[in-house]
Image 1: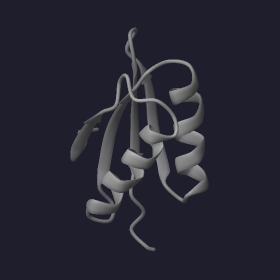
Image 2 (image 1 turned 90 degrees about the vertical axis):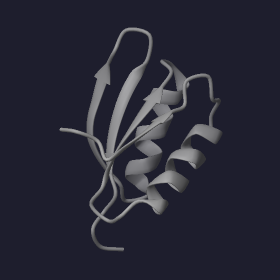
Image 3 (image 1 turned 135 degrees about the vertical axis):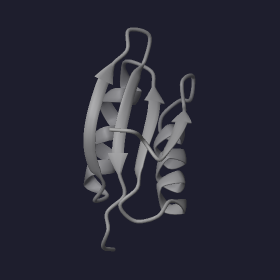
Image 4 (image 1 turned 60 degrees about the vertical axis):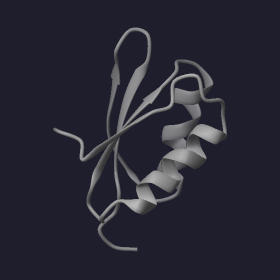
Length: 78
């Protein structure tokens, strides 16, 4: 899967990383895929769950050693 956009939030604390991810997804077209780079620990533990609770689809979480790549899709319907 190739993401439509990428957001590097390494070094960004919670909950700012969640807020920035949500704002970026809201700017994207419905059905678009966003890849977000998150730090291990609290960011990768909290952000995917928070996005899922907001109705976003978590497509994949990939461990890339120093960070995690989260692929999240904006829903096609509100």
